[in-house]
Amino acid sequence: MKDFMLIYRNTLEAEELYAQQSPEVLEANLAKWSAWLGALTQQGKLTDGGQPLYPQGKTLKGKAKKITDGPYIEGKEIVGGYSIIRVTDYEEALALAKDCPILEDDGVIEVREIVLLS
Image (cartoon, rainbow, N blue to C red; front, top):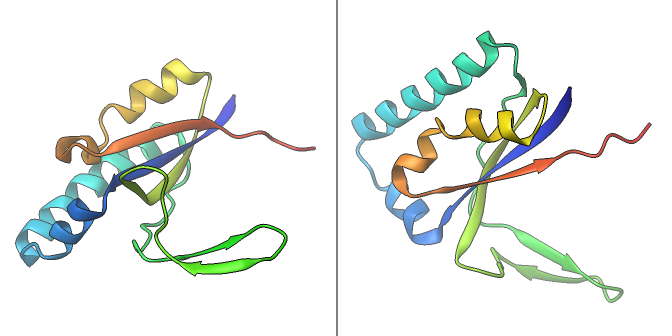
């Protein structure tokens, strides 16, 4: 079995719109996430449900250790959260990720295998 990190990405604009949703819409969205993560847990695939991340942050860069306010991103997407699953391979990780609620809002899931250092 291998561990994979699911990194949830969205646009800053989508995150800002999400924050302005009614409590009912937010609750419905949370219920979708809870159901999806619950299903992964029941299957024994979820090792860390992760946490959502605020869109704001700071970066620390280079030898000068320059600190800047963020998010500073290469593209138009920001990291909004993560989860870690334990599966046999990329194909299984991608199959499980396909049911993630973030995809309903045109979000992106980056799937990365975690290197286990012994």
